Figure (cartoon, rainbow, N blue to C red):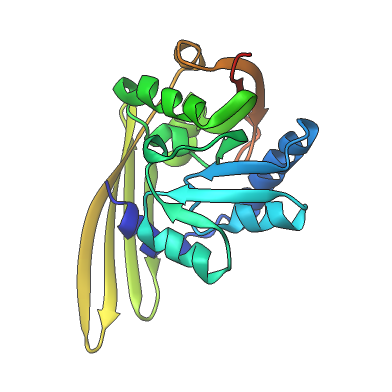
Amino acid sequence: MGLELYAKIEPYLGFEDEKQKLYQIYIDKLQSLGIKNFLDLGCGSGVFMQLAIEKDMEPFGVDLSTEMVRRCHEKGLHAKAIDICALDGEYPAVTAVFDVLNYIEPKNLGRFFGCIAKNLQTGGYFLCDINTLFGFEEIAQGSLIIDQTNVCIGIDAEFDGEKLLTKIVLFEQIDNCFQKSVDNIVQYYHDVADLKKFALQLVDIDLISLYADQADKALLTFQKGR
């Protein structure tokens, strides 16, 4: 999957106001649960962790993209390029911010939730957001072109009712030539009822409207049984 290519284009995508709104929703939820120390799964470049640190929290990030983890290290953040299933920790909470769960194929959800549970303390929480059906159908799909002096990016996303296929084309200037990179990203729609079948108990759902008046995301709070 095109994680490294996405890491290259992320700084050009914008949506900063929406991201900050979602980050603050997570911070508020963590604070309401009395959480200070947590694992941020799919930490990206570490912007959410920076906000958490400003709120006197102590996050540790993991991401599959080595480029994203490199950016975290540049900011002085604690992060590691590792699969959550290869990690052996015990945290009071795990977060997965901005669509992380939608990247997990349905057949792999059981293993994924098992790996989350393995890294949670008894009674610990897993917070994640998913795109609603409206979010996929009306917000996520479509086309976007970003044309700047040294970079041109084309993005085309199509939702078929079960998954969103996003094709990314990047032209970037290197010396006097432009280099072309192409890759795909797949995200999957998950019904909340299906997510109740796994290792953690769903204890709360918060509907979120980031891009429209109708809810395009849902913040899910799971708990590891005592």
